[in-house]
Image (spheres, rainbow, N blue to C red):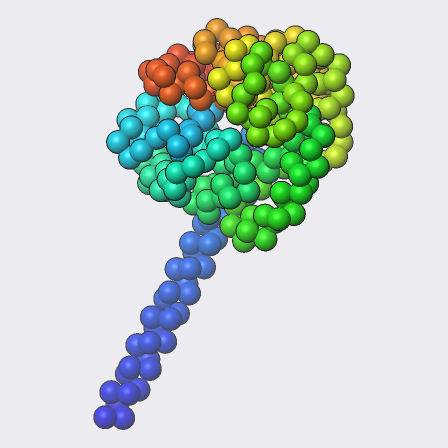
Length: 283
Ligand code: 1GP
């Protein structure tokens, strides 16, 4: 009887040590992996490699159409998958990220439209501050409210100066943010905003004409902003043709984000990725 009790204690200790060991390994692996996203972005920039990111809106995908999309992304060598939307109404965020993580090694970066779009299963989070607007809530207010959840998530946090540029029509982001976008032809405002964002410590600048913008950001504005900042520059909104993705990269974009056009025609992933990656070869 005594021996049985002693064996039980030993067995339980073994299980507990083993569980702690695996938890330790898992956390360590995760830490190693999540450390890498910003490093990869800056390393690619230094090597003049352009990156292509596909934006996946959890409201617009399900298990059935997400799997083929991931396969296309793998075969096209997509560099990053951004997950998020201005409004995420469905409950699919966690499942969506988990399915992606199970299916491929492409890093998943959350692009949240609101503080509740945090999934611990992703690799990193664009911690967006809407520096083009004057809405205090989106500059710092929502960050304060969500800080404990974000911190606890264990995600790699990427402080991002988010600049909305007028894309020719009100987009969800411009309506939800209740903030004026930077006029499309006011390059100097964009330049000064990006400079200020970088000096405030933002690690990335994301210029966005908004999902489904009628007019994408001009190459002229991209070039002028790229010339004054050192951090990676992400460009998105209204890019529907590979040629435009290519020209944006030539102008100085480091990462091109496409959502809408790929939702309409997933096969476009291949051409978009090839256009973006072809710039690096020529530098
Ligand atoms: C929107 O930059 C993203 O925030 C992508 O825009 O959906 O128009 O490609 P599109």
